Image (cartoon, rainbow, N blue to C red; front, side):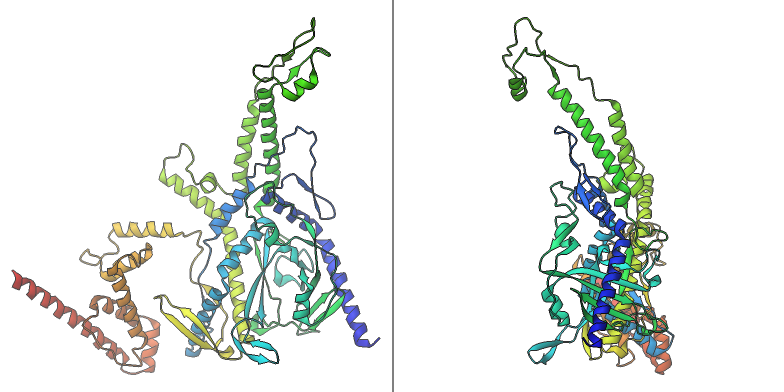
Length: 629
């Protein structure tokens, strides 16, 4: 046996031993996640074993009610619907005030916007939010996929693609840290990812043939949560299952150290070493090799790598609620069906047990004996009703999802609009912690995306960018055009400032007259902006024409330094004048004026020409009106 083969076997054994150690270390967390998933799916009569498995709980009596009154699934759905609004818009901040840095930051922002649209980041965040809400944490793996992108040629019988960024949603079942005490990925020395992969995919990706093994893994999200969060008790039990024709693929990413500046990447499957070397992705600051993972928590758990969620907190309340409802129904069944007392040997008990006391039944009992009688069942105690209401209020207290969010109805007795608005804001405040986690994850993903393009986009490539005016622009770039990855948010937290709140404030400003000019009238430009803010930008034909006029004025601003500007008769002079003056007050126009002498006078002459044409049109209209009189 050669030294290389011996080293490969030792390395594979060391990685598998490390995987077993980490799996044992987090076994309690895995059992809790399986329990959470089952409660959301409606399998609420289960318990977790010490070995990380879940098992169903048997009935104590055959007549015992075992229905599930799932309040956890609607709570999760409500929170997911709120978090669906958290989709921040990002831009890239230049590294300095130098012109090259400004242009590089603009190009990087367009590349980032195009990449997010192509990767369908909104859908990625939606799928990740499901795992985050149920298990408490979710991970995103941002890597470079060499088989994606445009086809650029062929190498032998295989096609060659330009490659592109890929974002994968990784449930917490797949991610193993080196220590549970590290709260952030940046604190971890290494991250291990283990998942069941078909052996054909391993051979295609690594060129190594491995034998299938009896893979004991947690069931996949697409199979176990595909039915939605409907809370049906007929859902399959979520837990460990056997995957056929698969093998566990173990990938360990180790952060660079003083002894190993490139870090380490090792892939093992079926006891064989598939790949070993430095970290493949320079996704860290200053283009340093780093771990390609982003963590998103529902609620941060202090001093722990994995976060916690509202489902875990609701499980004791849900168990108690099911017990109260089922005992209450059993009591009501006794009242409705009755409990019959018979003297021994007085009646045919088998017939009575089978048919009961049906209406019109002829009951024959032994002469001289006492006839059967129904025992007094009493009434349902009021404690059942009171406990049921208390448990429903505990759901609200623990999750922060009030009656307004859960049932889309106003609480009884509430007539004040101010009080209603305060309740809505309190709900959003509880969710803002989770919303900030989503925003932080989006920002980290955006930085890694730009860094991967900087590393792998050596060939020129085209991306499509849609501007604010709806104009489609093709941006040609290479890795050298991305000079900065300082991603910032253009929008604030979407939950703390909702569209309805912004529109309400806009209407208040409009009623106060703060948006009108000195004559108390709304200008055409301001009217268009108000229609845009309330969501009726393309509502009428007049608005469409105004939008085209504004877009044309902005295009004139962009090419003012390269070509002459002409005033056309069809121009809306008021809109053009407002856009040109707004552009002349920006720092970008001042920079263009420093580079090109006479640009300021050129734009002033163009604005004066619009004013003159506007005055001539008004005089012509006035003369025409006098002529008709």
